[in-house]
Image (cartoon, rainbow, N blue to C red; front, side):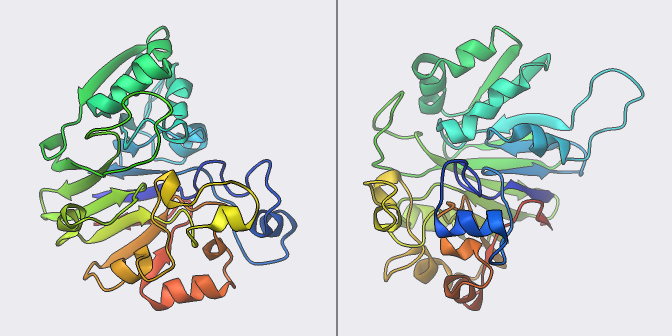
Length: 297
């Protein structure tokens, strides 16, 4: 199977439209080596023709255009087969509305995410006025075939983040996906939202060849230090990279072939290629995703 990083930044992208933090200034004026990034999403394909999106960011137009579309002499066509959602966050779902020109859209989401998008934000209710929406319920722990030897298993990712819409507690508010090429038996895990690396989540990482994992903030109090917000990374549902219990210390020893940070906030210094934090991440065997990165697993 093929996996492609469509967008590697967190909500707002890099640079963020209203932010003047050191990273955003650097990417605008070119004062330090760094690359612009769109908002978080990846795609997976069993054949490099049909692609399944994991999350639908507001930058979905550019994301779909970057995929290899099936050849067609006339009419409308798309390489997009379905969208798999990890949660109901606006940064991960607003792109669904931009797919309204399609005749039908297949959306895989948990009961909790569907409830938030249908009865909370009314996003899916609105989309249904434009095209048919086929909801495929995502049940954590169940293996689901996507055809052509590609399958997934979702797993619950506990969070204490306050939900703005939908259920405020219980399973299925946030999930990760373990994607498997059944022909080779090799798997990749997509985990863009991670508040705590629990034993149950660690089990999902066993024997995976590639891990795309939450790299939102370097410091837990990163946004507070910069005067940009009053919440810590953990309070926003994200495990910071740095610190004795951060993701770098916990993930770098794992025997995973490629461990790649995605969903990186514009304030995170690892986006700056000459930053000591970036060098530390790479020294520990982790990677920093960029838009367009493609991996065959």
